[in-house]
Image (tube, rainbow, N blue to C red; front, top):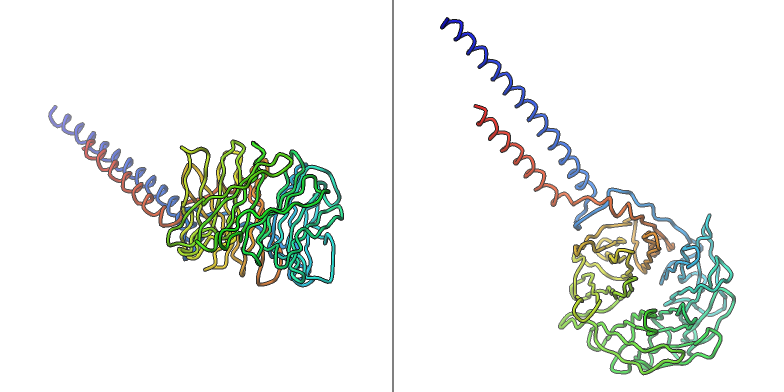
Length: 441
C-alpha cells in the first residue's frame, strides 16, 4: 500500500514538473514574441530617425511633387484652397522670367499662368488670397499682391485680368500679405514701406474702387514679415509683423465696416534679449481661437502662441528646438482645433511639420531631398487634409505635398522613447512569470 501511494505521489510530482515546464515554455515564447515585436518597432523608428530626433516621426514615405519647373520658380510661395472645390492654388515668383506665377490644381493636373507680364521684375514678396466669386483659372478669383523691383511699387493682380499699381511711393511693397473678407469682398494688403520703415495697409472696399493707404505703425523700424487676416466673427482685421527696432512680434488691428476705423497696435510677444517675430504666421479655428507661429532668431527655435480669451492663452511655446529651425513658418488648424506648422530646418535644409495634440507637440521631417522647405505655405481643408507648398532651392522648383489625417495618426515614437518601454515591458512580464512559478512550487 505504501509503495503504491508512493508511486502515485511520484507520478503526480512528475506531472506537476512537466506542467510547470510547459507553462514556462509558453511564457518564454510570449516574452520572446512581445520583445521581438517591440524591438522591431523600435528598430523601424531608429532607421527612420536622424541626427536631430523629434518626438514623433512618420513611417510613411511622403510623396512631394514638383508642380512647377519652368525656370527658377517657387520663391515666396503662397497657397490657398478654392472655397468651392478645395483645390490648391499657389502664387510664387518666377525669378527666370521676373514674373508672378499662379500654379493651380485643376482636378486632373497642375497648370501655371502669369496674371500679367511686363519688362519689369515683378513677383517678389507675393501673397495670395481667394474668395467665392467665380472667375477664370480654376473657379474662384485669385487675388495677389507683390513687389515691382524696378519701380519699387506695391502691385495687385487677379485671375480675371485686372492689375493695379497700389502704392507708387518708391521702395514700398516689400513683405506683402493679402486677404479678402469673404462676407463683404473687401481686400486688404499689409506691407513694409522700406523708405519710411513703416507698416502700411492698402484697403479696397470692393476690389474695383480706389485703394486707400493707411500708415498703421510708424514707431521705429516696423512692418517686415507681415501677415494680414480678416476676423470673420467681428468684422475686424489683424496684422502680425516684426518690430526690427525692438526685436519683437507685434500686432495691429482695426474694424472693417466698409471703412477702416482707428488702428491700434501692441506687442504680441516680447522676447527680452531674444529676437522674435520673423517669418510669423497666424490662423483662426472655427471656435474663434487665434494661433500664431514665428521664428526665435536668437535661439534658432520655432515658437508658437495662441489666444482664446484673457484667461485661456499661452505664448512663447517652442514646438521644435532641434538645430536651427523655424524659418518660413506657416500655421493652420484642423477641425479639432489642433495647430499644424510647416517650417524650414536651416541646419539640415529640410521641410518639417510640427503639430499639437492634447497639449503635446510633435514634429517630423516631411522632405529632405536637397535644400527644400523655404517659403512654406500651409492650409488645411474641411477633411483635415494638410496642403503645403515650398521651394526647392537646389533645382529652382515649386514643390507641393499633401498629408492625410491617417498619415498623421500613423506616427510611432522615436527609438530613444521606445527603447525604455520595450525593456520595461519585458521586465514586467519576466517578474510576473517568476512570481507565479514560486507560488506553484
